[in-house]
Image 1 (cartoon, one colour):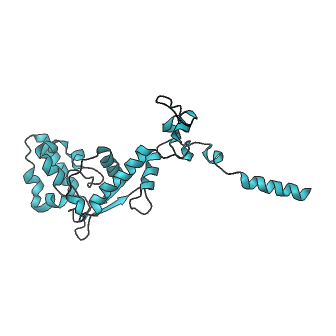
Image 2 (cartoon, helix red, strand yellow; image 1 turned 90 degrees about the horizontal axis):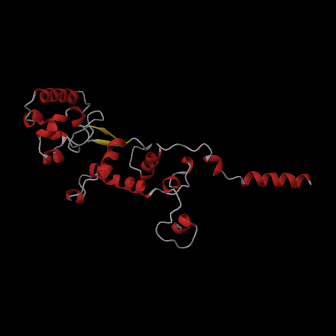
Image 3 (spheres, helix red, strand yellow; image 1 turned 45 degrees about the vertical axis):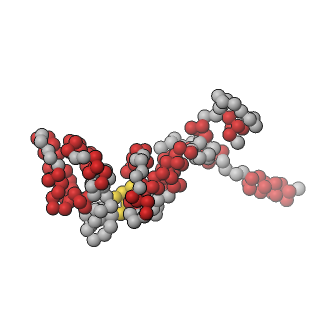
Length: 219
């Protein structure tokens, strides 16, 4: 199939690609042929690991060291809404738990005051116990102190429900649960729609058959 798409032959050599893959690997409503974009499909599947890391904390593979995938993490952050509960499943410095923002969006100067290991492991629950945040952030400059005050104020207006677990809801699926097809559709949503897509791919067979029947009755 690849050889046919590339050059209309059974076999092809390198450098004979005659097809704009970025165009044909789009849904039909966006002017493509409905062929899956494997890069986007793989990204949609990788996001599932970020989802499972949050929703299945007792899985045996949770302790394994995994290389952080920046694209996957950014996609997860952009499509997931977080409702803060106990806070033991949320990373204080990494997750967007403050009304859709991360800590460094509000107080970027505080990032330099903590170790990377703390940033990668410190949960919201740990940070809020006994005002530990103020104790661990050793700020020296006036601007950093002002950002710390601003951050503490932003935290106070977060709706935290200590009687339930942290909840992660996908904004791109009706059920709010992870769906690879829903995420793939969300990745395609920014593409320009084809005004003739519905007509090009519409089946006209039924109407033609009806016309033949009417013609036969008339004869």
